[in-house]
Image (tube, rainbow, N blue to C red; front, side, top):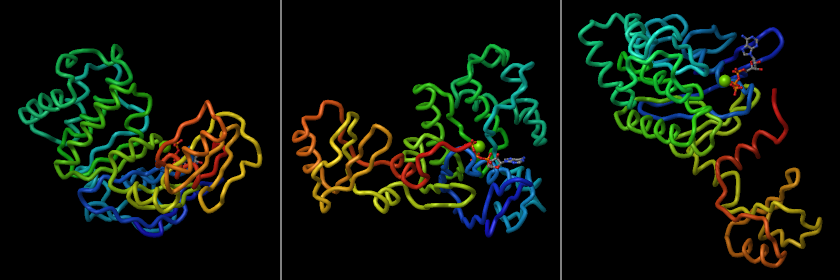
Length: 295
Ligand SMILES: Nc1ncnc2c1ncn2[C@@H]1O[C@H](COP(=O)(O)OP(=O)(O)OP(=O)(O)O)[C@@H](O)[C@H]1O
Ligand SMILES: [Mg+2]
């Protein structure tokens, strides 16, 4: 996509995106609420028309050939749109019909997908009896019914418990290992760090930073941080060549390129409530997108 813009009457949701995602990559779109992630995905799918710019997906110009492109794309929307009146297997069968798959082909495909998501014993269960996590797994395999090359997932693991999330990460990992391209949005920085080859941190419709998670962390922050969760004196007597300091509400963050000065500092201040850890993508996210709430 190049120069991509989406304007609504009262705001600009996507404000000049230039992005190229190679085949086989797992790409993460991160950003605070309202950053424009879902709008970007909808533009890629041709579900909304751009105000300016151009999009090509799997060699198809979008929106002109969006219908053709969508036959090769699997979609996991931000909110589940499964049919609550149907069973698991009926939901899959009905969805498969949209893609004109032959009935015998559909049956084998569904059986293997149910197995993939460990849902075989829930096949006849009515949707109303399923938990949120199970529905999310169903939405994922529904997206795979036509064996898509590209899978677009909008917050696939929001609201899942840690087990369900691990399970989904594992499944997404195997889809990636099969060579499929994945584009996902998430608010879980750990998820992005684990799954994604590259991430873009978006804010107010623009990309603030783009690269492999490790690269972003190294570019933006020193390697280690001491997170102090108790009041500390204003004048910490820090040596600015060792540390950078940031205060966030009642939290004090002290960054350094090595661990030792942080360990020393913690013992010098007789801290009780603190953790010393490597900096991560969440630190980058907060640094880039400010710390006030959006939307
Ligand atoms: N159909 C629409 N009409 C008007 N404004 C819209 C429409 N869809 C989205 N917006 C606005 O565009 C901005 C971006 O919305 P979008 O849904 O893309 O954000 P997001 O990054 O997906 O956020 P979240 O993390 O909360 O899902 C928001 O300010 C939103 O209110
Ligand atoms: Mg969204």
